[in-house]
Length: 297
Ligand SMILES: NC(=O)c1ccc[n+]([C@@H]2O[C@H](COP(=O)([O-])OP(=O)(O)OC[C@H]3O[C@@H](n4cnc5c(N)ncnc54)[C@H](O)[C@@H]3O)[C@@H](O)[C@H]2O)c1
Image (cartoon, rainbow, N blue to C red; front, side):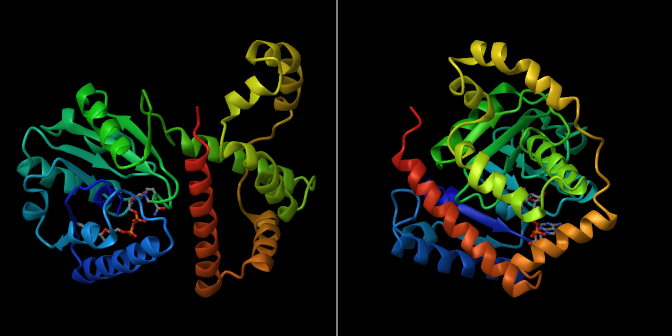
C-alpha cells in the first residue's frame, strides 16, 4: 500500500495463493476505507493505487524489472537465507534487495551473496501505514549508494527512514523498546507500581512527548539546553541508573500478575484483541494526521 501510494507498481509474491488473494482483498477494502475517511496516502486515488498492485506465485516474474525487493517472509534465518540465495541467482546488478527482518543481522542474512553490495535491512514498524519509521541497516559490504537509494525511496513513499550506521542486535528501536519493557517489568515485579498504572505512565506521560520529540531533544528542552541538562541532572540520573536491576526472567508470578491485569483490560481472545488493535490503529491514524499538521521544523 505504501509503495503504491508513491505511484510505484507493486507485485506481491507468496507461496500461498490464498495469502495473495486475501492480501489483495484486504488492500482493496483498506484503501477504499482510507479514501472515504480522507486518510489515503499519496496523490493518486484508491482505484489508481489499486491498479498498481498485482499478485503472483512466480518469484522470477515477481522480481523482473524491479527497482526494489522488500522481503517479508517469516522471521526464520534459514528460510530467509534460502530466499536470498534464490534471488541472488536471478536479480540484476541494479535492484535493491531489502529485508523486513526485526531481529536478524545483515551479516547473517546476506553472508556470501554475490549481490551483497545491493543488500540491506529496511525494518518497518507495525502498522507501517501509520507509523512511518524505517530502520536502514547495512551489511558491512553494502554499498553506500544502496542505503542512499533506499533512504530516498522511503522518503518518496512518505516513510521516515533512519540510518543505523553499524549492525547491532535489536537495531535501535527494539533496543530502546526492550530497555523500557525491562524497567517496566522490574518496577511491577518489585511492587513499586501496578501493571495498569505502569502503562499509564507511558501513555499519559512520557509517550505524549515522545510522539513529537525524542529523549535527547527532551533533555535539551527540559533545561537551558543539553549542556545545562547534563550539568544539572547527570548526577541524579546516574544515581537512579545504578539502582536498575538485572535482566528480568519474564516468567513466574510476575507474568501471571501482568497477564491478569492486561486481560482485565483486553481479554486475550481473538475478537477482543482485534477490536483493540483496530482502536489502536485509529488512534495512530489520527496521531499521524496531527503530526502532518504540525511540521517538525
Ligand atoms: N508483523 C510485524 O509487526 C512486523 C513488523 C516489522 C517487521 N516484521 C518482519 O516482517 C517479516 C514478516 O513478518 P509477518 O508478521 O508479516 O509474517 P507472516 O507470517 O504474517 O507472513 C509471512 C508471509 O510469508 C509467506 N511465505 C512463507 N514462506 C515463503 C516463501 N518461501 N516464499 C514466499 N513467501 C513465503 C507466508 O505465506 C506469509 O504470507 C518478518 O521478518 C518480521 O520480523 C514484522
